[in-house]
Image 1 (cartoon, rainbow, N blue to C red):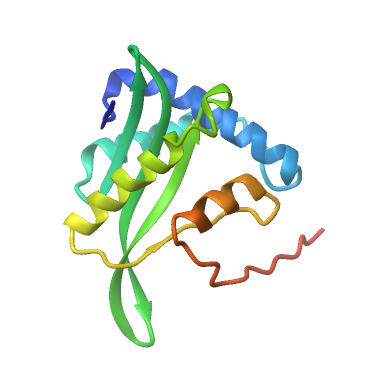
Image 2 (spheres, rainbow, N blue to C red):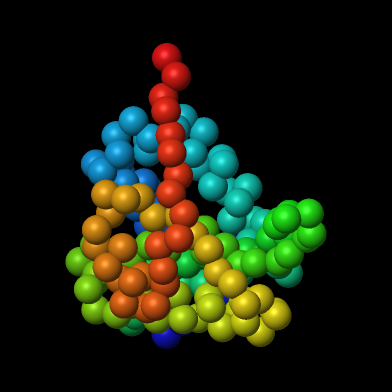
Length: 155
């Protein structure tokens, strides 16, 4: 069952967030690390998702256990000198042992519905180029790779 996140879900959602960051750190060790203030930072974001109408956080619950969650927000951005709104998927995480069962797709569809119901016609999100499992999932859902992000670590 998919439902809106509640304050009492925080610990389980944070564990899923930690799991995701740890997985990403194996793909991009220089970029993804759990910072000393990670829980404080995540707590602030979590509270915004519960309070602000332009954000949505949902959980996927099975037999009373949260096994996945997702979050999105509506953003205004400047595109060729005019403001446009678009949706951004900020995070989706599913317990590792429950992956490859369509749960991430169900979470994404629910987030898409929230954004569409709020007048959004375009969704963007970032996926690490080394995260082949996620790339394949989103391509199956008709998302297109559109932008390249270049980075350089300055030392």
